[in-house]
Image 1: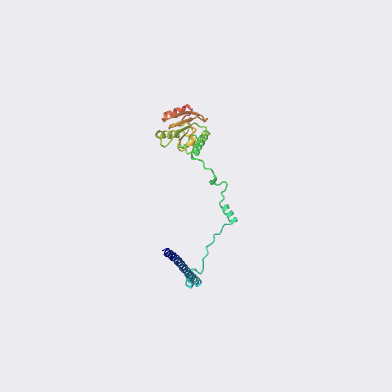
Image 2: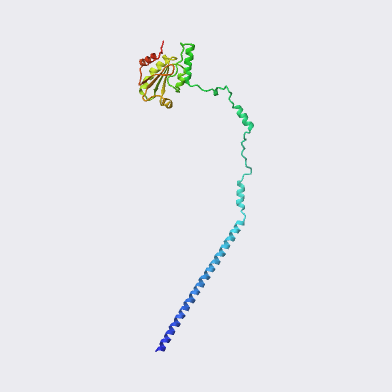
Length: 245
């Protein structure tokens, strides 16, 4: 009995060893075949790549007569060169500058005198030469320089207003009339506060119209706020010693 068991155990061991050997041998064979196939495929790929490189090299070395002929036909035989702009040398520039030199006494260099100043100066000179022929200065101020107005040594009436001021527009015909009647005796100016903001800032103007009267010495004689009728303005002129003979 014991002998039979030993024989059976030995047989099982032998069968197991044979099975392990067969599995191992089979796996080695499969690995060899895979390796062999992969090496063959790599060699084929290398051969194909070498053939492609060789064909590309042959294609690149072949001449292209048709393309060259077409490109040669597109190139014109003669190319017109653009005309170069001639630069002016120092002598030519000096000549051009000499031609554009403005004479010292040219009328272009004369400083333009504002129309307002012209009319006032003309009125004063005309009054000295012929009192009956007096030029009337413009009422609306094109510039506002009080010191310049004071230099004429005449009484001054300044009406500070604006184009949107209703009472300023209401006074305008009266001021126009007085400006003609008292030309050369009183300087009457209508100053737009919107146009001369910086100049008007030194005066006490909070409501429109605001009227300043200056005597012949340039001192503030009287100020009025609001519209004035002609009779009230004439009373101020008389109190300043202005007569309209």
